[in-house]
Image (tube, rainbow, N blue to C red; front, side, top):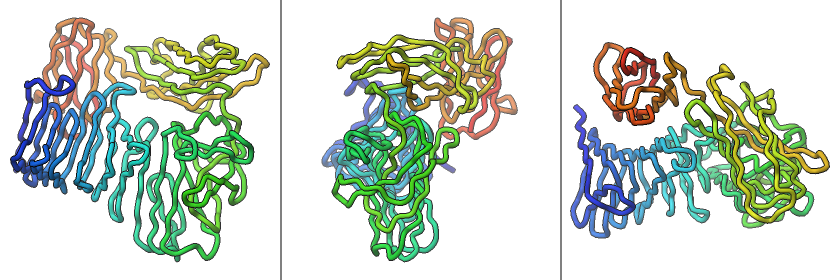
Amino acid sequence: MKSLMTLSLLLPALAGRAQLVNDGATLTVQPGATLYVAGAVQNNANGTFANAGTVQLTGDLINAGTLASPGKLLFSGTTNQTLTPGAASTVGTLVLANTGAVGQRTLALPANLTVGTALILQSGLLRTAPAVTLTLPDGATLSGEQTGQYVQGNLRIERAAGSGVLDFGHGATLDRSGLGAVAITRTAGLLTDNLSRAVGLGSPGVRGIDRIWTVETAVAPAAPVPVTLSWLADDDNGLASFATTQAWRAPLGSSNWAATGSAGPAAVSGSTRSFSFSTAVLDRLTLGGLAAPLPVTLVAFTAEPQGADALLRWATASELHNDRFEVEASADGRTFGRIGTVAGAGSSTQVHTYQLVDPAITRYATPLVYYRLRQVDTDGTASHSPVRTVAVPARGPAGLALFPNPTRATATLTGAAPGAAVVVFDAVGRHVLDVTAAADGTATLALPFGLASGVYVVRTGSQALRLTVE
């Protein structure tokens, strides 16, 4: 039988969170046991933290001592978290299930780390420091990367010698026959020239997508290697058209980019993109030669639910002849229509912030709404931003809504009576959770860890909604 240890600490600590401090002791989590900490864990220089079970925490993990964790580390906060592994360079399974708002659900990794068994992304972004690498050795798996939920920074995946086409799992697929052991490091999402995105592709200042793959092989290729590179809309880097795509290569440690393979159209399906080519030399690879970037420096563009509406926000660091932004929406990610217009700043080197509310998004009759910006110059030239998505809350009687639905850990109920009891039942009528609605009629449903997948009932007063747990 699994055991569960819960530490809901109320002691004052750094950043106002509860904190479990191990100062000189040995803290052991046995196989099959779960240690839940409602806050942060700090393992000091003379402490030992041995985890062969599961450690779930809602705050940071800061290790300055000995961290031995062949078990599972589960980060399930609602604000940004940090994993500081210290001298320990390897953990077994790392799970990110942070359910914070957009911009507040990132797990920061400030030091090198190896994940020996599995990296599982359930909710949130994992972001390494620019000089830090997260490594998955041969046999370790990666799952859950999708729009708004992936590894930003440096992700290295290593695979032993073999033959045939192999999908490394982080956007690189190649035929490894005759190459021996292969390691591919993907650097993505940092918006940094020649670190995560190439500059000078055919013309000065022309950039590629915000992903670069560094390929290292034990044996140099004897013939051109078939390669497919794929990426998320998050890393479009302001590029709007994929009708003409070119692969680019630079030597290891160099930023001298040269075209490789044949140009052609990239495949675009939903939020993912891919392009296939062959190259006789691997080294550093990226994609570009798409369309010119936006004539503004777009530094942020987010879309998030706001009750029954969608709130769109974006910011520019500079603008050149920018007449306006036309905000476009789509129910299927392919056909977009304008829902509003926001005036631009013309020409400016100052930071400008913008926003627009799309009301009552249930009118799209789809579980997901897609948004993009159409930036229009004073001469009528237009370019599109990357696409963002918002999950549509499920609607219930009398204005009740649940989102996200389905969920893995947390959902929000809106439209309840202030102070009303909200109860979650399982399929056979057993109580799972009881909470009280806030003054604004919202209730946060933080489902118990390890809750079985299936359909549950959320009831308040005489009204009820179905909640699907994945």
